[in-house]
Amino acid sequence: MDFDDSALAGLKDALPGAEFRDLLTDYLESTAARMAKVQILRATQNWNDLAFEAHTLVSTGGSYGLVRASTLARSLQHACKAGDAEQASMLALELIAATARGCEALRSRFLGDRAAAA
Image 1 (cartoon, rainbow, N blue to C red):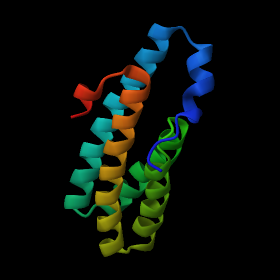
Image 2: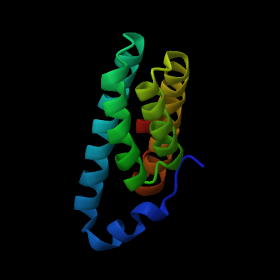
Image 3: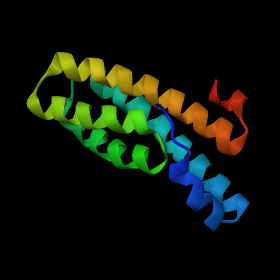
């Protein structure tokens, strides 16, 4: 499962619509920037910094319902710390793909914006 919308259900009910949309938009923008950074860190084999990014993505992904991305980020963090370059490289690619799918689902479910996901 790439996305679980129940992670945001309570927040959606607690915030005014515009604030909720702004919060999601900020998350989506910062996540896009983080995925670009993950790609660069993977390409340059900077496993220490990639482990740090992965650590951040575990909690943020989980908080916004990106279940698969959060799980992959934790695995990526462990692979980086273990110095397993092959596994880390593969997991980074999987993380990027799962995050894209999760963000698309989030946009579609809460922002009604499939076009922006492409």
